[in-house]
Image (cartoon, rainbow, N blue to C red; front, top):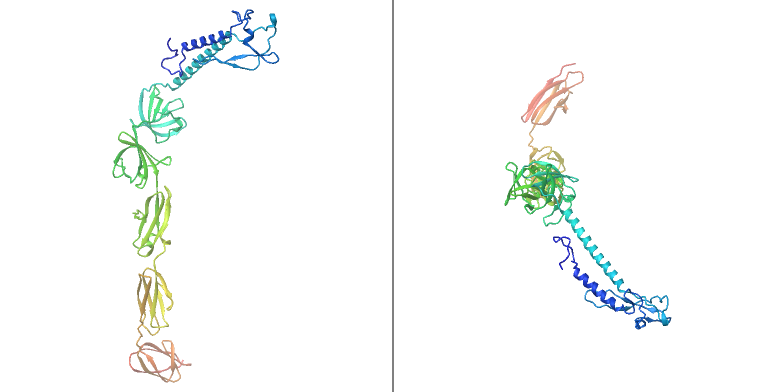
Length: 496
C-alpha cells in the first residue's frame, strides 16, 4: 500500500502508513484474545469457564487486583502489569463464583481508533500550517526590476532614486513585501536605511513594489581615504583607484546630506555602487578645521599636525576629526606642542598672541651713572636687566655734559650684554667783561643772571642774548656770539 500524503510536493513530517495502523490493530486484537477466556462472544460471562478464578488475584478482603494491559508499541509483545485494586464484583454467580467484568477486546479497538483519528488530525494540522506558510511567502511576480538608491525614509514610504534613468519617486514598501538579504534571509522593511542600494521589483500599472532584494551586484568599498574629488569630471579617487559618480549621487554624513565640495582628503568614507558608478558616498569620519588668530605675531611660523606640516588658506586648514598633536614654531617664539581634539564640522581656533615668545635678557653697561636709558620707547633703569622678546629694538642713552647715544639692540639669544660709552662734550669758555652807565645793572645771559655791572666772568662759547635791567631805566638787550677767549660788553642805559 502506498504512503498517504495530502500533497506530494509538500513535506508532511513523519509519513503514516495504513499498513502500520493495521498491524497495530492486529496486535491489539491478539492481545485482547488472551483476555477472552471466561467470556462469551459478546464479552459476557461464560459459566463453563473453570479457569475464571485463576485469572484474578484476591487480597485479604476478597478484593480483586486487576491486570492492566499496556498498549504495545510496534513489534512489541503485550506486557501485563499489576495495577491498583479493582472494584469487587457486584454479585456472585452460581457456586459462589464472582461474575467476570474485566476488559474486553472492544476497549482496545476503541483506543486504537482514537489513536488513528489523532494521527490523521496531526497530519492535517501540519499540512495546513505548511500550506499557509507557502501562501504567505508567495508574492506576485515583478513585471520589471531596477536598482534604486534609498534617498529618504518615512514609515513605509521610501524615496527611491532609479539608477537606470536618474528619476526619483516615492514607493510604499510595507510588511507584505518580501525583503531578502544577500544571504537569503528575510528582513523587515524598517531595516531599510538611507543610502542603501536595493533591487526593487515592481508590478502592475501603478508600479507597486512586490519584492526587495539586497544583492551581491551592489559593491562596497570601506575605509576609503586620501580622497581626491574632481567635481568637474565627477570622479573620486584615493590615488590608487578612481571611480565615477553621478550628479545624483548621495553624499551622506551623520544621516544628513552634504555636497561634494564639502569633502576633504582627510575624510574617511564608504563607497557603494552598481556597475562602474558610485551612487552613495557615506562619510564615516568627517573633518574639522584649525584656524590661526594673530598669526602675524610669529615670524617664520611653522604649524604641524601629528608631526606633518600643513598648509593654511586664509589662516585656516582642514584636519580630520579626533585627537591630534599640534606643533607651533617660529623664529621669535618658543616651540610649542599641545594635544588638541578636533570636532567634526567645527573650527578649533588657536590664538598665536597667547603663544609664549622667545625672550632674552638685556644688560646695559654705561660709563656715566646719571644717565637716561630708553629702550623701544620705554625708559629703563641702568642697573636693572631688561627682559625682551626676540627681535630688534631702538635704544638711546643721554647724560648732561655728554653726547646722546642713539642706536639699536638685537635680542637673538637668552643673554645679551651691551656696552655704551658716552662721549663727553668738549666745552670752551671765554672771559667776558660787562659794564654799564650808570653802573649797578643786573645782567642776564639767555635768561640766567651772570652778574651786576661792572663785573668779569667765565662763559661758554655760544650764542647769547645779554639783558641789562636797572630800576628807573629802560631794559637793554644785546644779542652776541661768544666765540673767542675774551669779550667786553659796555652799554649806556636810558632813564625810564
